Length: 412
Picture (cartoon, rainbow, N blue to C red):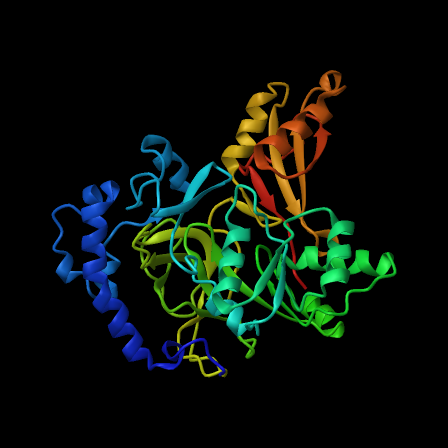
């Protein structure tokens, strides 16, 4: 079978009617069971919210607002409908902090559809290198693999030599993780004289996947496919063998809006990705991801008929995703506040050799430089959960443009 289910090949009109037909009841359930939506949707005739134009009249809740919302109303900002116990299997924390629930349903994050498009099948052993600690990425991939009948080696991140040893002994046919870490594992295996030859397929996410990386994996006999997903929404869109954009998941409504507004943009225009996800446990309605993309015209040559997006085209705000983790301007501000010797700071993200790198440029007086760099690096690692380099520079050398995070990454 070429498709995960028959929903992927229904006519666009059938899909649109089904999604918009579900919308009023979904909104009503959210208003009844989630305190924040009881307030946000109060007094509205939800039966009339059954078109895209009507949906666009509702406010956008942006990811950048979640941390503040959750601090005011623990644990999920009043947006979730479940409580602790059998309904909530796990709870995760992403940088911010932002807390995400995982309901007790099979394939809760809906990632199995993307795994299937990437060629994963029952009987595969999946070497899963996404983190199982704090953030949901590891659990997202494991639940998808289990839904398809795959076995999983929960490798997580780091410990490259031990991971290579496990791959040599267990001979996994499939990999899940970031593309850069897959390259690191393959290079380490070559260095140790035990090249990994069992891998035939890979599912990658968490960072950009340029054509040069895909081609390098193909040269090793590995077909790799990417997807666009978030810890809040689960799967948004996924790559198919057609290799033309990313096909939307079947259980969401996606809009592209003008950044900073809730106004939908026409097809082809680059704007912020806003998603309404039909998740009864965590009903995110017009959720602004902060990511930029655009809708591609027409249908995929692979036969799937849902809309396609170009993929990730940058951030609508200054938040950056580095090695699969979001880094927020507020986290950089916390680092600077912790060290009053810093007059001004700017986090610069680039990717020499296609590997993400963070460098925090800090203006300070030369007399204060001794011992300061290490202390700032420790704070940066503690507050972002990522390692970064600190560069001390003279007062007045950084641009006075209000930019806290500068993303200089290029993908060729």
